[in-house]
Image 1 (cartoon, rainbow, N blue to C red):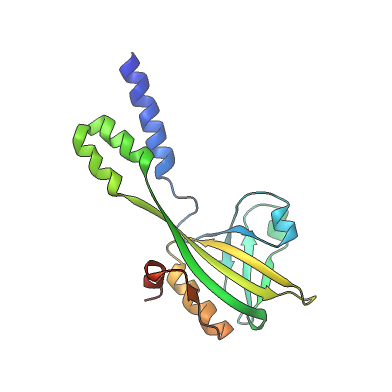
Image 2: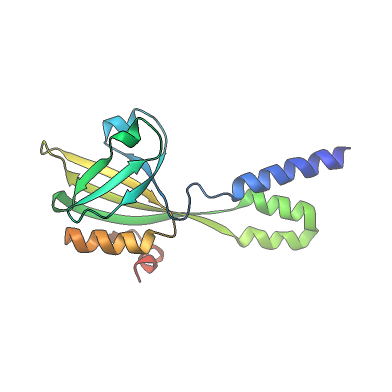
Length: 167
């Protein structure tokens, strides 16, 4: 009975940690100085709309924030920075080791990466604002290229590992 409980708990931990924070083609507001988005607390899932040639638009998934998309004028952007956070998938590795024995230790080599685009811009009132977006891995390259092109600014990369995403 104990073995079954341990196996069940291990599987729950392994599957819950294996899921990405956001979908592959989505984005999330991870932080910044936008009061209406900070009032909610925590990350806000959504998507980026790049169909407007003059504005980068973040649309939250949930109401009432979905009714008020955040629009950033490309001309108002004065700094862009891209970085990533890589961490080991410890939960799935423990689960694999419990299920497969020592061969499961190979799973400790697995990493989960989160990608962050930081945008500093002036709002309509002339105040500096900061927007930190977590990008799904499926939209990183396209978003970086598009924002860099439309804002006419070079993106500052935090390290060489982050720079690889622009290629």
